Amino acid sequence: MPNALANLTGQRVLVTRPAHQAAQQIQQLRDCGATPIPLPLLAIHPIEAADPRYHLLKTQMMNIDEYQIIICVSPNAAKLAIEWIDEYWPQLPVGIEWLAIGGKTEAMLNDAGIPAKRPAEGFNSEAMLTMPTLTELNGAKVLILRGDGGRATLAEGLSQRGAIVTYANLYDRCCPTYEDTLIQSTIYQSSLTSILITSGEALDNFVTVVKGRQQQFSINSLLSLYLVVPSERIAEKARTIGFTTIMVAQGPDDESMIKALTLANDSEANA
Image 1: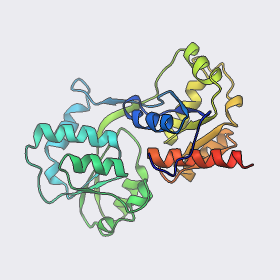
Image 2 (image 1 turned 180 degrees about the horizontal axis):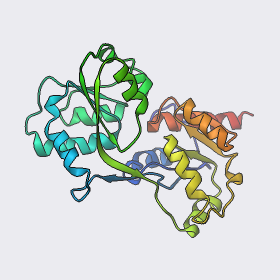
Image 3 (image 1 turned 120 degrees about the horizontal axis):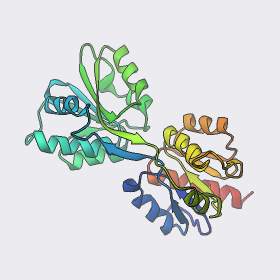
Image 4 (image 1 turned 30 degrees about the vertical axis):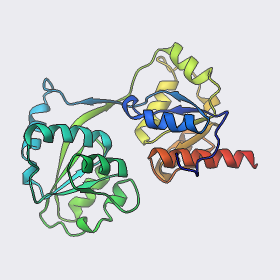
């Protein structure tokens, strides 16, 4: 655990990452002395063979050698893309520029033998568009590996630079459903002090989920909790919802999110 992370003893922190991605963040919070409260706000469902979209996806993954640039937008996309490639490409095709949004996505691809690069700074589409590789794209074929929906800014920017952009939708992102009794005990009766949210979609799902199945719970008591988000765009969205104490982390990775929580905690202690 980085030395920069301070003591968070007494903090009860809502962890909202998908269940299969939350373990490291939960452990880091425990190492800081905090009590993590898990409530996944995104469920990841890979496209299965029975899905009508499966045939197109299979065709795209069997023909990745047709693309000059392939961009992987998330660790979920990286994990599933690696599985597809292992299935159909015993030897990785040459001549493809592999790019990744975020250090974790880059590391997953590199660990699988896929030589990916990421932006020097930033974790979003705007950062990706600053990469020199994407400056002049006259007629270049670009495949974006993603979950269904999202990343319109990236595709629009690439198209404006002359790229021919195709999406490969590897999975769906869904809002989980929870029993009202679990929401009561996890959210309203657990003395939360802060919330970690890593995407605008997760923020929307948070508001939906914590209102209960019949939208019967008021979220007013939650709006003054520390809310840690990875970008000013999501912070602005949170302000429109009514959150009043928002910390913007340097990125959505675990270390940046917990460091922002540490800064919020230090600010409160010194107020």
